[in-house]
Image (cartoon, rainbow, N blue to C red; front, side, top):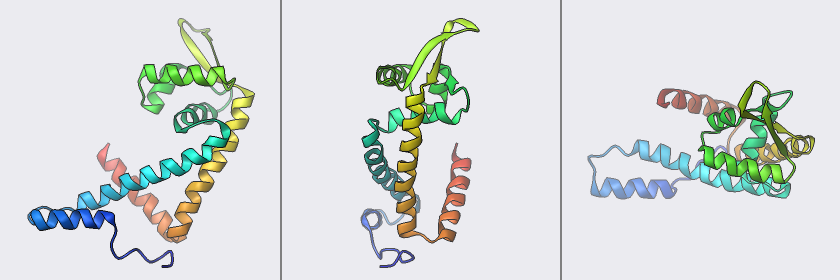
Length: 169
């Protein structure tokens, strides 16, 4: 099968076929679309986690470091800004920050403008590591896209997913 040819039948088709047999009144197209999105996200999470592993981090730690890195100089945000960007609980963020600080990839310091606040700053070692990890993760994602879709299909898919996401959030 070349990259422009879709498989004739996949596991999601099997599920929607079963529903069609027992509930022919249902439109299972949404299940087919989102079932494939969920399966793809899970498969890619595993591939990207493997790409980040040599750098001593999983996706959660990468997300924190990458958020600090892409914030630009001086690569500093408050824990609240990080939590809002990453959509995790404050407890989850504290655990990640503890692990990353212990590894020397970031530091926490008092916020000079708020006596009760903290600032989280990416260390030089953290910046170097996240720069390497982002390249490795993108290589995995690029390989997955290029193995199955033409350049035009990749652009079309990105646009359709953007449109779908904008309509649902």
